[in-house]
Image (tube, rainbow, N blue to C red; front, side, top):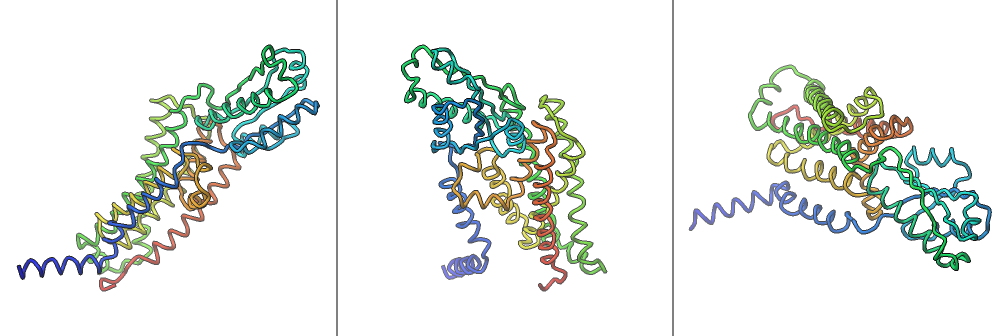
Length: 369
């Protein structure tokens, strides 16, 4: 029993002295529970819809106000069609409602009145929300308007136009976004093991005994996995476009250019984990906890970011997959929109450089450190 007690005492001391054990046992599960409890909301989504009213009837103006008073819709009024179109192209609004100039005239005559609803099909779930919310608000307004006596014989006839993804095929939306998850695995998980593997196998001692510089070690870890990641990206794009027939309307040079920035950023996360932990198992677990899972749950691929609490919306701003998913979905579905390309590239570049500096600062060049 003395030997057993000594071993138990040693294990308890080892756990207390090793913060990584506490992190894996308590902190990471806590983070996951908090994300599932408060970060994911599948019930409702508040979408931004553009409104263009061509009917000067004061009664129709109350319909425009109805869209602004809904708790599910954030409305923005446009005066001309080009501005409304640019709002959808640049993802400032997720859909639009256009009220034609004869809308009230047809309703007063008891005729079928057209209401044009435009949705962005590159995000299938959001497009469905736009359609449903736009029609529900219009129907509720009709029942309380002065045209309600004609409600039995006059009907608002929606003319729905879905942009970019006319068939609302969810695969066209999911497959491009899933490339960000794949690239996260390549960039974070694999690089999280390379430095730790060197320390565990003792090869780092042999490396440090030479005249190698710190920058050589850092670049020697970055470059091979950037090349591997680009090859993986090319293979995945081929599968999406050639095998699964996902339409690609962008530019391949722009696609791979932004992808290289994303891999540069993701590799920085993985190398930083590996440099700090120096243990393959621990590094792999932590990389899954702070890399893969947030990329899947908080990037906007599976769940809309605007349905999350405000604190989680701000948290997503430091996650590289958020910017890459926004870019790649636009590149596949809508083509190259330079405003989206430039903004997301700037964020990825800043994050990548910050992480590169952190990796460099945390790369040990002494065995006793």
